[in-house]
Image (cartoon, rainbow over all chains, first blue to last red; front, side, top):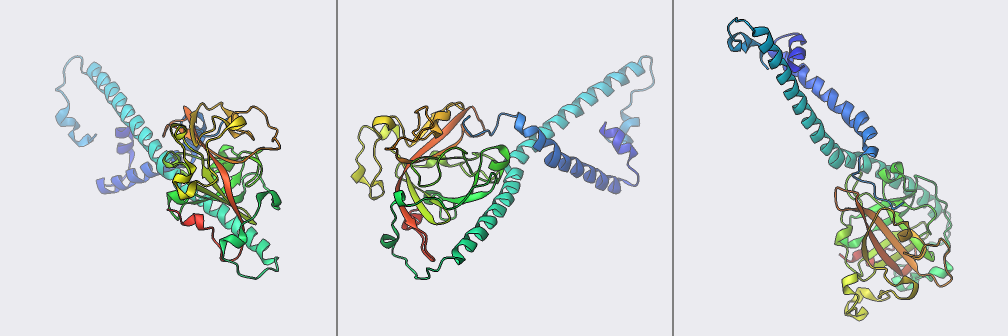
Length: 51
Length: 294
């Protein structure tokens, strides 16, 4: 999967690294702002009220 | 991962090479998948422990700013400009005080100070205990009493993440002050004796323990700290452990703080109970002396 992505990134190796970094940060942002906030209520970590 | 090496690593052409390539592709794919899952799990830990703290502190700052504006507006309408800083002149009888503010779900209405956690420990308490409310800060259980009232002023807060307001509740000792500031009042609660202190309790052993004693009667078995199950809603009822929402005429003025337990888990709940020992009217420039207890 990563080889496939790497091969499709254009430009020399340095530019590829920059693009790979950008892709990684985009994925992290997606996780932090969308996926994790959605996932969180389903996980048994921090429900603190009595009910 | 580098494709430049592939020609070197590739086995010489031989029968069956296609099959080996398939195996290699599958193994590599599974390996990359496992690494990816590991990184995502680590990122979730970072998110839960650090990133939600950042988001939560922004929400908390906004709630604090909002309540500061409301209080500043209410203060401007009072004509009393006499500066009184003697605590004894400001001591009030909680029976004479009734809340003159309204609470809206998700909005702050009081501030919480725990001097034992440092002079900078302060959180704006919001109304409500759903996950959105508690992301902002400690949340008041709707339906429980207000600060200073007879019955139980019950507040829930996150142990870890979302600002972690109640992470250190396990460090509270008996007689530690839990101070609540509302629009017009300061209410000083003190943590009740712990279960293991009950037998030899002597209220005079410590200057801060006046008004704090082993609980008896309908309050028997209410301790400063209790570990219980998540379904134990009776902890936040007017008389803790008594399964009734009615406030008896002789009810004490109790504060209850709840958070999850153990740390990083929500299998159980940690409960802190305290009783009101002092209250003051707010005055410009006046801070309760209890806030100075470190």
